Image 1 (cartoon, rainbow, N blue to C red):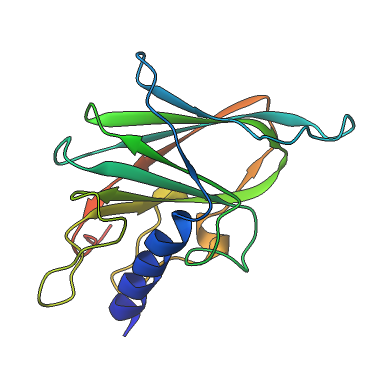
Image 2 (image 1 turned 90 degrees about the vertical axis):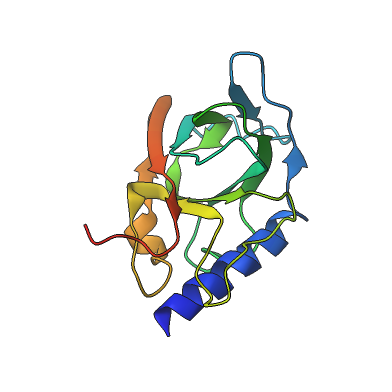
Length: 171
């Protein structure tokens, strides 16, 4: 049942990110920058979150990245910020600039055929790559916000997410 919930969550995540993101073409140095269009309050401390996604099976398709700032949306509702990136290497780097300090979680999807959703085989097992911050995985469903969340409170902070294809392996 949890595996089914993971698949449903990723499919829903794939659908909602399209309405809340902007497509950003990767920079020549293979770094995608996502900036906030609103100016943060002068009293609010902000920084740059760097997310490295690695372990792509191929450069086909696109990478969908969603940043969540609370448990009520994670992982299958509207993200706080998100982007689509063309894949050009075995790893991609995305920067979220001017990000207010706080608790966040990241969800990623390697959309192999650019259809904007999680694809699965006839048994319901995901065929697209996916991952979450803290590299938390469960064979039976998506992690909770608490499991995937981290405290962002530095001017520059990096997180690495390893992609998983199919059912997660036991760790």
